[in-house]
Image (cartoon, rainbow, N blue to C red; front, top):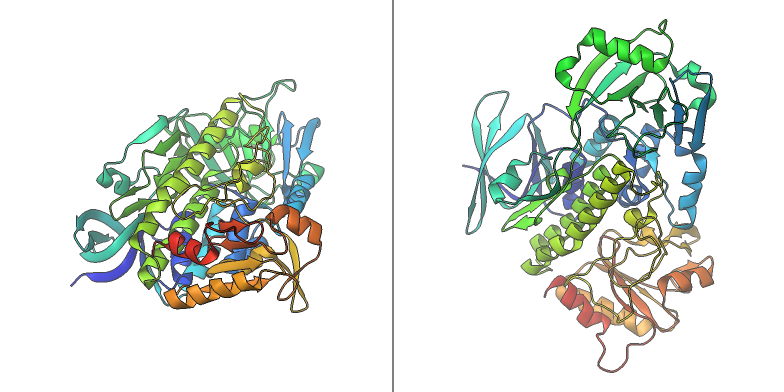
Length: 535
């Protein structure tokens, strides 16, 4: 008999692990399969942005991620010189970038390589008894049926094929997604752009780098040259390559524009020694990863009972460090919706809002990454606040309030905290039960009604409708259960007065807003809640 599960997740990278964690938090069992024997052994992505850290905060793993990563205050700089140890060099960016986030979020971005991040996420995933995770299991085929999807899975250790039947499948199986192929979904955009090789190596450099410690080291013998896409275009490195820190001590990546066939250990060591600038440093090559950045987005994110997320849905250049982060947000959006449907308090139409909400976000991030890769727009390393925090959803899971969209000079880099329906609910510091918390700490489990001091009846209506429909919801009256540390900042960001209220979804995006008491004929919070969940 096949294994039965509500959701099958394919791929245990950051997106698949995020889906597993999110589903467990929603109370939904899942099976996650991964063809490799364990988490990534290669650093791959290394930048975790503010929004991803906010999601990790919801899941209670932000502290573990900070403990495993490198602080941006000390490591978040950008270096340019003829070699890592060159006498003359430039160093810029850094700690100020972390400070920039303080007005937007209780979190900041982190430098943490994927091979270090994935075990932290895996520990959170396996901690839930409702999550089953099988490494060394490869998807062979999928067969959609009237009541779900039947999967054939190869157990690579035994050679046996196993059956898994699921009501829904999440394809987090990477750029060469088998699920995307089975679904017949095309990719739209720019095909692979250049051939690169990342060389992972060990060298004891921590005591040598001193005041040149950075996240990215651009190596160019021409001190006046600006590599195309500078300073973030790792996908198109200068002639001498780009050094990327893994731990800024002993483990490093050298990215070179080359074909893997032309590199052996001897040639790789030569390239590494040239990049370091000291032939006496002992070097040990650990491995190679050939890769070619692309800028493509799936034509649709869902096909029947199949949903695409992460690299299966969008392929980005490394410029902007968007890929991993957008993938985690995909999973975050999808998991609560699948969980709500499985729990019975949302209609099946809710999952149909995944594509119209997340595909525009993926397409915008992909476009911005590509433009920064080409160097046609000045990049803002780790400061693309519009891409990171500015997602504004338009779907049936959002009830418009009639206010116009914000006009921004540059939607990629500019961000203004706001609570217009569809936006990420803004951060503001609160006092609750004698503790300092962020408004973001209220969100994540179910819906939240945040009502003005004179809108207690709105909060009561939300509670009553939620109880009747079995929807998880908490309601807070400002000035009673929670008190803003700065009422003016809170009111300006949220756009509600004393008689106004917000309805915030489990993913922290605003579902409904009334700046004051809803006018006659306007959608009230109870009807908004029904509409959003499709009941």
